[in-house]
Amino acid sequence: MPTTTADKRATFRKMHEAGCFALPNPWDIGSAKALQQIGFKALASTSAGFAWSIGKSDNRVTLDDVCDHLTALCGAVDLPVNADFEGGFAHKPEKVAANVARAVGTGVAGLSIEDSTGDAANPLYERDFAIERIKAARAAIDADHSGVLLTGRCEGFLVGRPDLDMVIDRLRAYSEAGADCLYAPGIKTKEQISAVVKAVHPKPVNLLIGASGLSVAQAADLGVRRISVGGSLARTAWAGFMRAAREIAEQGTFTELASGYPGGDLNKMFG
Image (cartoon, rainbow, N blue to C red):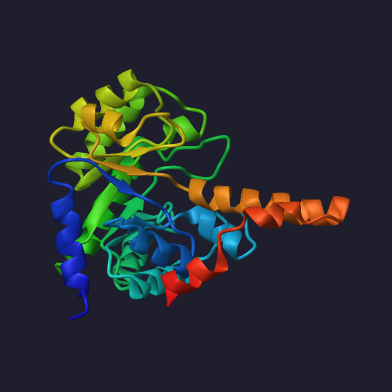
């Protein structure tokens, strides 16, 4: 019997109640199916990985692009999918709400909203305005009782504002505004991670691994509930592709191709 969207959403919420789990980020249907085959219990999209897969830079995809992509991912696997929904593809809270409602319609089990503006001079939305954006996302999710899990993100460490007190203050505010999970990508040290976990307790915290060098067990010891890897899996795949392609172009040799994953195994996995 196929897993329903409601089942996926209920499962995803349950996963946030205790323990620590890895939430890897596929960039297309093939990588999503592979991660399911490997045994992961939930997935998250990656804005960067998806953008690169269609020949665009990160934060340059459209709302239509992303919603089509999320619909495809959710339809391809029996696992809950959390959407990297960037900043909601809008500035004003009411437009964020409309776009979040559209994302909910793709079948996602969760989605995140960032507080970065894309403006280097003023990289974060003003605090009260950022809170209103989270409230708008919460209202859109609750409008049809979808059960989608909302993650509030503070991007301070990624946009040149590595002020832990400011980040914690915003995460607490986003929690009060209705975020179910909190996320501060870019925090690295055990002290920073522990401070964030304690500040928003009992709400769960998402940790970006790649920015920190911790294992799942070490992150769990700090109280982290879930771990995502952003565009790191996509970058790893691109690294192998670029090494092989450049060898052919620059040296006229093909030795890197020998390190490719066996085609027979891929056929079995996708068969």
